[in-house]
Image: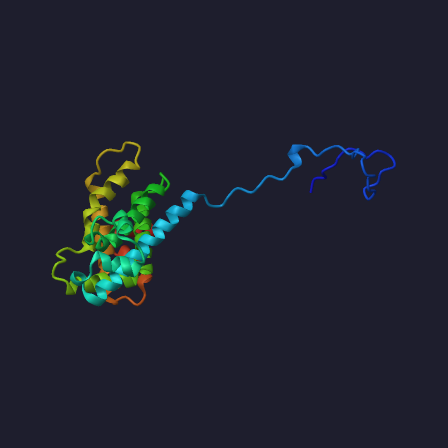
Length: 240
């Protein structure tokens, strides 16, 4: 550790000697460069607010899915969700435009993970490697939210008003994913048929895995996912 006083002390004054009252300290004042600076704050107010927003949104979705599974989708109101989640109506509508949008939250989060993984991949990696890793990120979300996805499947089976499968929206993202992969290349441009075929087959394989996961038909989810990916020639090379 650096010493605060680097110049010699005047003769006759030791480090343990006290100064007489009224006398000035002959030792030089420490330079500002030796003063301790406060450590930077680990989290800004904006970071904390964003974290709270994400946590509250997730808690709202969990509360809604639990109510949907218990009472049926049609028998749950926005007020019921707000009471269960401990939030106000204004907060709910900051998160979701309508009750229906809560059902699409798993698909939104999974597609967001894939898009983020593709965007963060090194430019020199081939498309099959990037896509396989991105879809594995989506699978990790599905595993950690398995209960939510199973509740969603139960709600769809028992609620006649739900005419779409939120998980089917993964297929609607195929064109966007293909465009993201194409944009990684120096030439850019629209995705060619090779890229579109790669994405279509990869997403189809992931949807099969998700169906098996939700149905409880894969006791070992990760090996099952790799088996599906390895069965597709366009993705198998990405594992080597």
